[in-house]
Image 1 (spheres, rainbow, N blue to C red):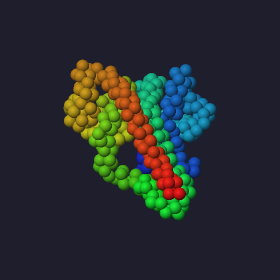
Image 2 (image 1 turned 120 degrees about the vertical axis):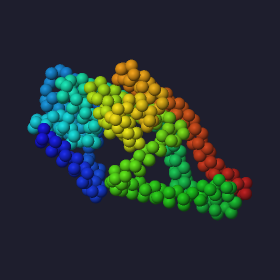
Image 3 (image 1 turned 30 degrees about the vertical axis):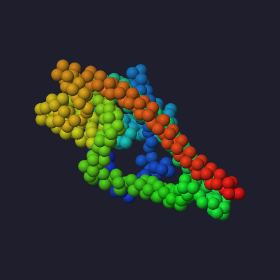
Length: 385
């Protein structure tokens, strides 16, 4: 145990003492497939691994053998990580502690559930619950991406149409219009002036993207040292009209699914909230969860603590309070999570149904403006002949 604690402290200290220069070097190495930070593991890959691991353990295969089998028969970054984890397990570390070497792959909830499974002897059940949780979160993420994909594609196509006309078509037409001596209509003059503006905006955008990528270690360090600034930024989506409602529902469903999974595994309420806060993915939500957790440790009920800090929508808090008073909290947490998950799906469908025609109209206006800018001077030129 002492060796495991020393190992954990070493990883924590390494993360804390990394300078921005070292982080940038690791970031560049990762871009070219070198260095420790090169790993790219999707939630879907981790879900499949967790489900397969639970199946193999349920079939009576020892943990080390199951990890080795997955690492040797699969390809990608995750199998490479699992091979390293299997080596640590073979040397005497527990699986939960071996995973701590990869905090960007295995979050605190994943490790906590593995640890609870090891301590209670119900490791198979723990991994099945973890796989269920990750499937819900992955499906929610897919729904969000699916709802926004088509509007984003339409936007990109419209921008590409403008860029193609400005960079390729307009340069061929401009000399003809200028030499004709015909007064150009306003739409054409606006489009011609964009020849100088668009390249400048392109260069500025390129510099901003590259500068942001290179400056990411310094930006990340700035926010790590100033959590209050990060909280304010993460709070912005909760105060934007239309966006606030759906963002709050997504956050609520995500946190509550994590909570019911850990409560099912036997974690105490305070430990559950603490780990849910760490894996919330939003510093504003995490801070409020931690504040509510402190109230609970001081003796307040769950409903009272959540009401004070407005961690969830009022409807969710009321239902959780009822579940707590009826001594049926875990089932109520799951019910509320399912309810908000369904509401998220409906809200995303509504947003997609509104955005698609809006972007089509905007795209039509843009294309119409381009066509008008080209046709009007052509008509005037023909009339002047």
